Picture: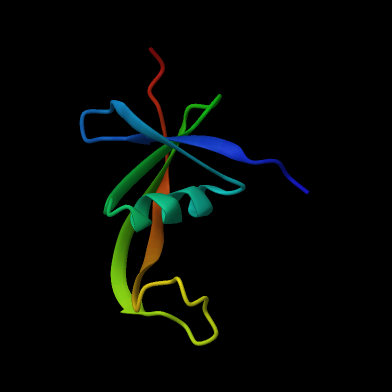
Length: 90
């Protein structure tokens, strides 16, 4: 089993504004999309790779058999990978 990896969320100016962890870039991107981020650029910590995703979230009814404490509507996120970029050498 692979370990969790850390991904830094970058804004339009290239500043890192948050950290999301997951076993894959997609898992970290889903976490960012759940918080409402639509243009997702994740840099894998320790590398110069930037994973680019487009994210969305929609409000859906809670699934059958879910716990009683869950609200009637929940956020369901979805992401589409647009590609991988490399940071320019400085």
